[in-house]
Length: 131
Image: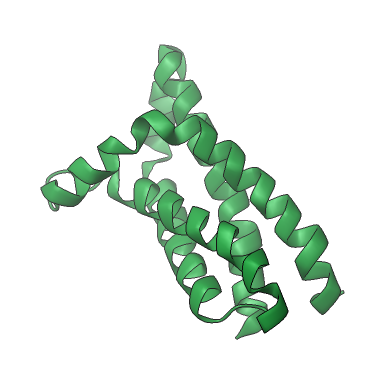
């Protein structure tokens, strides 16, 4: 279970961070909005992957001494996973869609935090246990 947590956190928040950054960039540059809509199914899948990885990290940390190392990436993964997965589910879940739209102004700092948390999580906490 711990290896699944590590890889879901590392890859999930890295890809989720890049998709969040790209979504911010595409909203400010109209030529990339078409690409963003083509990536919508992938964003929903990565969002669900981040939600699962974040939940696993909070409930199954890599160890008691590394709970703090999983806390920030886990919380970031939950927020990014929620935002990415609920952005394109507008007609089915309007309340959750409205909540995800409130996170939209914070997508650039959230994406950068996710990428930074993934790098720190991989090199400082993951390499001690898996390499």
